[in-house]
Image (tube, rainbow, N blue to C red):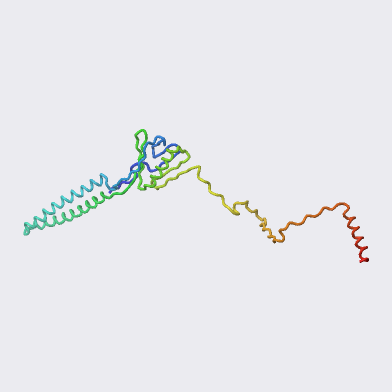
Length: 242
C-alpha cells in the first residue's frame, strides 16, 4: 500500500536572513509578507488514489466470488443426489473461502483509509497574492518561526538570522546581541605558572601586637655626641657625692 507523508506539501528546510525568508526555491522579503496563519488539519496518510482502486477491486472480487459460491452451494442443496452437485459444492466452497479472504482484505484497506493524523500548516501570504505553506506535525516549531518573522516585521530587526529544518524539528537562531560566555575564574584566569618555578607561598599572618607601626627615630644633630659625653662626666662626678 502507498502511504503519503507530510513532506509532499511545502518546504522542509529554510533560512532566515537579515531581510528575507528562504523556503525551498521561494525567497520572500520580510516586508512583503502580508499574513501568517497557523492552521490545524487532519491528515489521512493511506488515503491515496491507488489504495482506493485496490480497495474497490477487493470489494468487487468479494461480491463476485460470494455470488458464485452461493450458486454452487445452492446447486448442491437443490440436487443433492447427482454427481455434478458434489462438484458444484466443492467449487462453491473454494469460492466462498476466496470471497472471505477478499472481503477481509477490503475491510482492512477501508479501515486504513480512515486513519487520520493531526498536522499543522503555517501559511505565509505575500502582498503579491502568493501563499507558501510550511507543514509539520509539531506546532511549536511553526509558531517559533512565525514569532521570529513577526518580530522582524514589527521592529525591522536585521540582526537575527538563522535556519530551520522541519524534518528534525530544529530552529537555529543567531543574534550578535547574545552574551559571550563568562571567562573562567580562579587560578585558570591568571597567567599559567612557568615550568620549574617554585610555587609562591602565602605570607605569614601577623599578630595583633605586630600590627602597630614602629616608632619613628629622632633626627640627631652633629653635636649630639658631645652632649652625651658631657652628661656622662657629670653623672660620674655626682656618684661619690651621693
